[in-house]
Image (cartoon, rainbow, N blue to C red):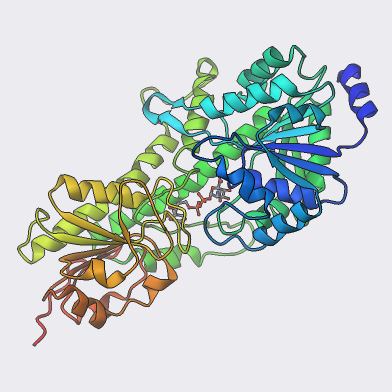
Length: 479
Ligand code: SAJ
């Protein structure tokens, strides 16, 4: 523990001013909670005044949320802290010199998962700006999900180069990964336990001071920076693995002619102390900004340590295989659609297919890495004519999203359900059939939200993920 840093922090006293770099799904709710905490005096939200996201600066400073979709309590909190003068959004990064702590909540996508090559461009720009302006005794925290080894590796290097100071000596450095989900951002930050990992104990301690002020139910779990990086990447990797396991089971159940949901309920019934059976839900695919890439961050971290790794010769990583299984599910939806059309002697080529749900998750407008896009592209490749409906997603590059479900169902040979939105749970066979105008429309349920019998009775050709008990049903001719 560096006495020099200890003294610098003691001279500064408790954290009063904070800077948040990256006004997005993580940065905005975090900044507002810091600003609303009585212990902190002022929070700057740092946002580049770029063509694509510069508009956020004025919106936030006028107390408005630039985030799309329902975020309970967020708009009110922005208005409150802006009115109270406790939050300012700015593109003047030199103000970082004033703050006691600066956090970075910047996207860390992958350029190419195959080569495990992340796109750290935006994060490196943020680190350079933080390094350029931080003052002695400040704390820097990475909240983005990153490859294990990044905090004490690339981030430390950039911050030291830009600042001319030493991490652990002149400034504190830590990783405290976000754990938020769209639709409940504020609640997740307040209530989830927070993993806090410093490059040394004094950095961990200083970062704990920051997060303990915003947690209501959650507790702080201190550890090393590397352990924090692995915790975050592997908690999403494990979730992805659990989803891949039940997706594989669903594919088996289809082949065996049984209902995966009966099996799931059976497995889930084994309860009692010490028995955890976390079986998740099969479906049309895994989207979003997290599960689709965090496995590759973990893999990259392990690769950096592969000279010490003892693993099966020539075997693929279980985690990467899980990614491939989940990436296969939209293609499986395509195969089910094709099989359904073939049952009535139709080819995918020239067929009109209605895609219900563009969001990657239910009842949200978030369509980042949506599985629906993979399915849509497969249809286009096969010469089909896809159309898309989603009650929540307003716009998305390269696709027209209809508001009127009748419009996409009209003359549709097939209907594919990709998101479990509430609106779709009320779908009625008779009404859908009337809108499609087909004698035997194909309906492919990727989220198990419709009752197969109600549709089969109306002459639909039903296909469902994991529904081997129904997928080869007798087609009914309705007089
Ligand atoms: N999905 C399934 N079956 C399931 C659960 C989800 O197919 O049983 C699909 C969803 O449809 C969606 C995708 O997986 O397409 C991701 O869904 P999600 O519920 O995991 O949502 P995310 O990605 O927004 O949230 C995850 C969460 N991680 C964990 O629970 C370990 C969240 O806590 C994280 O904060 C978030 O990633 C993140 O930002 O890392």
